Image 1 (tube, chains in turn red, purple):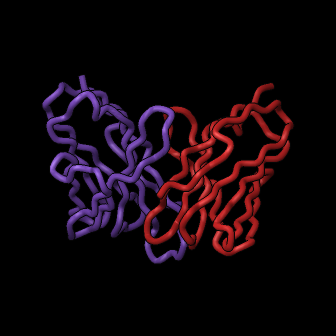
Image 2: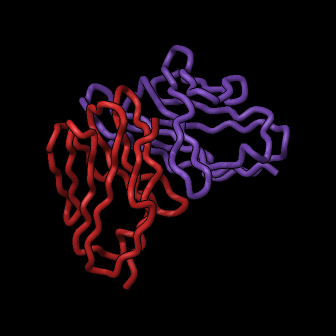
Length: 108
Length: 117
């Protein structure tokens, strides 16, 4: 079953912050986050392995609440290059099941 | 880093013909590769898991006789769309994980945009 992402879309001004949420109905071993630009393949952002673990990459970070089976991606001081569709991938076994995606547009 | 190469990047074919898409892991051996399909503005939907030396595992609703998967070597998996129809037009993406690396991410090929006329 596909994890649920929210919001489905968000528009930001450069420098603003955003949070993207991902919720699964299954117990998860890990959560992966990817960003996809239009017409391109998804690019790996980060993976979260443990409950409560938070990881960061530049101004993009994420958290994983294993008990609640939820993960959130935090984008701070957004840049134009952050625009794209963000997918969470729920790992409940050997394969990844992706959420519906969150379309993020950062405007100057 | 792990690199996955996919070919062709774009293909246009006539209805009723077959199209083969190749997925190669360039710097690692992949015993398992995953094939996804993505329709415009939608998510990546797993079609099948390709296993080297054995039959692929198909997701529910994916016709195994229509989407033939062959994983004959540790670096190559192929997806053949047989008797293609316009509704098969989509973005097909393969992916693989580096082996023996616990919880490694999926590395995606650049995708193949298939248009069936």
